[in-house]
Image (tube, rainbow, N blue to C red):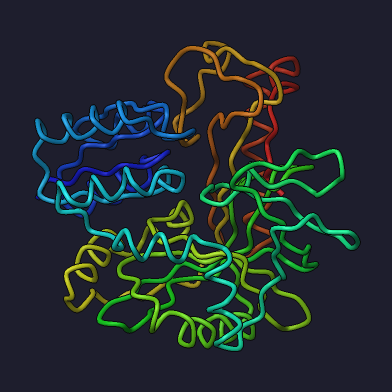
Length: 365
């Protein structure tokens, strides 16, 4: 079966799909070395990390016309261009949520109204400049957290901006699949962010039974009437033994990296077609995924990353603030996982040297 996978970073989905026996065209913003190894064909579309233009969408459709996939799967990249997603959905057999469902759940005001009606906690949001308290300023239709700022009076308001009350606690993500209006929780993970920002920097599996049970209960309340299908994710804050929902991501999620032992691509395909999904029996291993970012501009030729580094860049220059590559570790305990990550970081410091490493933000904690 021929799949086209379109996402800001398609590497993990392409690897999983190929391992599950699919032929893959990966369309992503980076076309890094590992994506080129994972997919049968790769096409780079840099604006998936910004905002797709009408020309981008037209060129994407032409590329897919030539490749003729049986199905198209979508990750991040269309949040700010629902119209582009709708065009894609109408032209090809997209296995994912209806454009109308995505438009609804990505509308922060609609979502908060829905959450409130179902008795689910969520931080207050407003379109009016807050006069007191701690607030975050966000952009509707964005992903990855780079658009989020701590609200200060000097921050300029924009057309799609809104304010959300700051909620203390642990940032949590949940990966789940919806099939035949039934939800299956795949896993719960702690979200990492870049220091001083809200940008996604990886995740670690969580094994807190109370938290997992709370998430399962929340999803059973939340998901049934939303019209979601396939694999989706949810961001929340865990505080004082309660979950406060921040947003729903109605698409494939980067957190799938933590659960690659499961046939998640097949589960997504089956659930979107209304079929029974394969058994999803998660192992008990601890696991962590972390993303390196460039602190300063860095030439890829300075790196020559070893094979156990993931998302290895191919060539050229990585701009300051852009993702560089990533690490993954798995073990019997959280301490063992952290030690593996630390050991790999030490090896990279020896390989790359102090000068190069000063340009890199490792985010292994």
